[in-house]
Image (tube, rainbow, N blue to C red; front, side, top):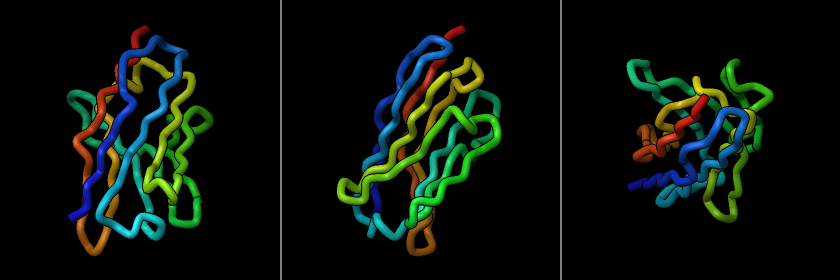
Amino acid sequence: QVYLRESGGGLVEAGGSLRLSCQVSGANFKIVPMDWYRQAPGHERELVARITSSGDQNYTESVKGRFTISRNNARNTVFLQMNNLKPEDTAVYYCHNFYRSRDFWGRGTQVTVSS
């Protein structure tokens, strides 16, 4: 079984920063692409950022230039550095991977950006 545990969410003013972390256990972390998703109230869950096993990164357009995804394979951890946060970034942020033909999700961490 694969477990993902997010941390680092919170309340921040617009323009502020947060750093999310996701600790992964039960998987061969270094070979697994990792994702951050988010879901705002009344909206579908959307892919925010992805990092491949080789470190290639992709972002949804609305966060490009503000968010950075990274990984530390020695610590089985993926990060999401979020800068210049906007109220529209308010959502529950989830860590995700697809491993051995299954989707695995964390429980999520709430990010709230006040205007």
